[in-house]
Length: 331
Ligand SMILES: Nc1ncnc2c1ncn2[C@@H]1O[C@H](COP(=O)(O)OP(=O)(O)OP(=O)(O)O)[C@@H](O)[C@H]1O
Figure 1 (cartoon, rainbow, N blue to C red):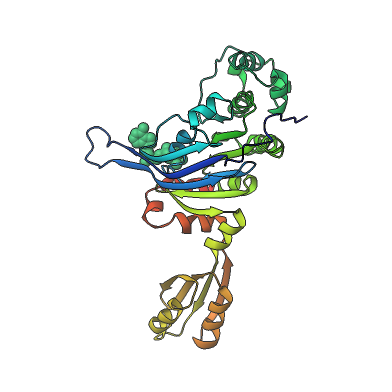
Figure 2 (cartoon, rainbow, N blue to C red):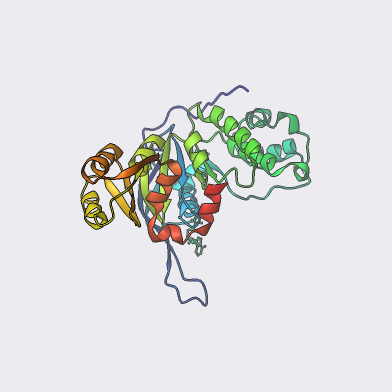
């Protein structure tokens, strides 16, 4: 697969994406007593050219609404969105940004190549049809009808279409939704090769593994706000910490819990009878306190993974409102 990006390199110095105090509200649904929906609730974000950024968050977090504003598909209620220093719609018209959205009409009776050719004809300047077919890994499927392509193959076709204007910024909204693990891996292999040439990629996902494996940076979104922003390693260490559990002598649990809560970096202390479960950034300090000062026994230390980090950071009542999240995580 050859990768030649003419317009990907070289930018005006403006950030690829700049969101300032971005807010989007929707009126309450008809007949509902709810107040307005604050889908995006004050987002500030700067993405530099060449970054690969995952928007990670549970259902209803505000990912799609934010991306829609980056693409100029919807106007902010307040605040602003800029793409390479321009208004989103201007950036779209200039071919600086394009998107692979969750759904998007494809004509079922056309072949893969016919589809790419048709969309290419709508651009004043476009990447050669066979080149995008090759880059999207569709070479062997070029003559297949869209109706005969699997969901994953159709998604790769949408990806090929998004590459036609050779955009400096590619937006992917849950690009692998509905794909099995193999198709998902194949899609990301293709994307990896493409992004390594310097394209800025912003994608929304529910899948932690996907964000972890593919993004340089994760922007964790919940309830319309950014709840964490950093490299995957930073997110993991910031939120996960470790869980330390021990059994305490009966009668001393209450006072011990108080002492544990006072330790710097302790995030939570849970009592289960005489057993305490402590989540903390510095598990060594907690373990020492439990064993040496508080006469704890049966010590257990568990490293929390990215999933735990995700739950911790998107936690509180918002996680409770997103039952789908747990089944996503369990997949
Ligand atoms: N057109 C609309 N009218 C009313 N409410 C809307 C509209 N679009 C989105 N919302 C609400 O805004 C909130 C954010 O939705 P959004 O689709 O941006 O979340 P998301 O993070 O992309 O979720 P998902 O992962 O499920 O796609 C949700 O509560 C949603 O119901």
